[in-house]
Every structure is written in structure tokens, then in C-alpha cells.
Image (cartoon, rainbow, N blue to C red; front, side):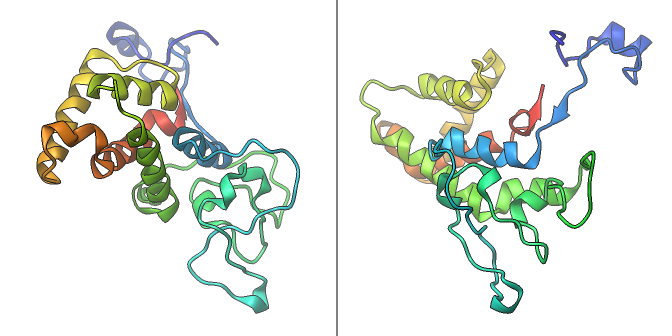
Length: 212
């Protein structure tokens, strides 16, 4: 259980399918854990226990089918407090194989389909939380620097520091976004547009939704 999920070249040649378990098999987080991780990273997560369930956000409501509209971020509550209706599963959670409520399911399906990547890219919940994270990052930036902020974001999202290559890539991305949004160098740390995009990129790294 302490093995790395990174495959070495020599081991991969001998055991390409990992049948001998030369590395830890990385697995994807469950739907609820993915949503909760987004809330934790953005700082919106509400750790309050107990209380009423929250209707999920949905594009269309239907009173006859008891499909009501909830807040986009679910008031920051844990995903286990999301109300699940048999008529329609919560859209974001459903994209990541949320267990259905109609039949007993001893083990969840784990799929890898385009709709999951599209959910992390385009779902209003993810975009909102990227904006919320950027707001928190840009509120207090007195002695901050771009490298320090990138390291802090990696620590928050992944519990680790970025590698040298990752840090350089993100610094370059910040520079490119500054040009795209026409932000002056002295205003980079205060730009919510730049850091919203950076937050969105962090959410969409493969490591964010998996256990490496």
C-alpha cells in the first residue's frame, strides 16, 4: 500500500499489464469525493454535520416529478447531504458513476468516458468553484508571489509540492494568461481572471480526481 503508482521503464517491460503489481494501481475517486474535493480546494466546503438534505442544482425543474432546484454549490455541504431523486440523479455526481437508488448495487461501476472530462471542464459547479477559489487567492496577496501561490495551490489540491517541471509550466501559463487577459505584470497576483483559469486547470489535472 506504500508503493508508488508510477511505473518504471524496466518494470513496465516485464509487467506491462501490472498483473504482478509492480506499482500501486491508481484508481479514480468516487463521485461524492470528487465533488467534495472541489469544495475543499475552493474553500467553500462546509464541515457541518447533520441537517436537512439539499436539492441538487439542475438545468430544468419539474414539480410533478419532484425535481426541484437547489443552489449551485449545494450550500457547500458534503455530497452525502445531496437529495437523490429516483426520477433523475444529480447531474454532476451522475457523470462519475453515482450509485443508482433503484436497485441494490454492491460495487460501483467505474467508467472513463468523455462526459466526465466535459463535466470537469464545463459544469457550472466547477466553474463557480474555480471563481470562488480565485477570489480567495486574490483577496490577500501582499507578500505573495506567483511561484509561492502555485505551490500553495498544489498543496491544497494534492497535498504535495509541485515538481520543478510542473512549477515552470504553471508559471509559463500564468504569463500566457496575463497576455490573453491583458493584465499588467504588477497586477497578475490581483487578477481574478488569471487565477480562475489556473484554478480551473488544477481541477482538470488527472491527479485531482484519482488516488495516485
